[in-house]
Image (cartoon, rainbow, N blue to C red; front, side, top):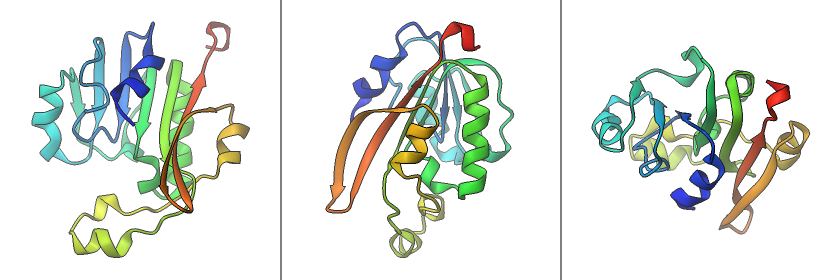
Length: 165
């Protein structure tokens, strides 16, 4: 997946909240108000270089949401315990004016041994949400890439109509 897979769905949006933003690579060339929630402060310089206007170094489960046109959560939801992830997703749904994009595996892929070995505890997969979870919440699949014989990463999109907000 590349930046264009994300930004094509942000047309008409003037603000984007990027959850678990990492280096900010998904919005690097997108123009508008960019807010990052990123627990690891080591990414702050890269986020600033990618044009992020605000960087919040906090856990997404502790972030206080405010209205934005779009929320993106790319390669992040699976790193949070399921109950907490659903609460954060609900907050994102309640505060997004136009669009939510989530990119996540469709199968639980335990990477704990590898990530512990690499001393990357924030990268451990803690939850998985099957495709039915997303369709039942009103999301549509807009992109899919094969990871291995059992797993695909899927980009899900949910659009909100003005009258819903």
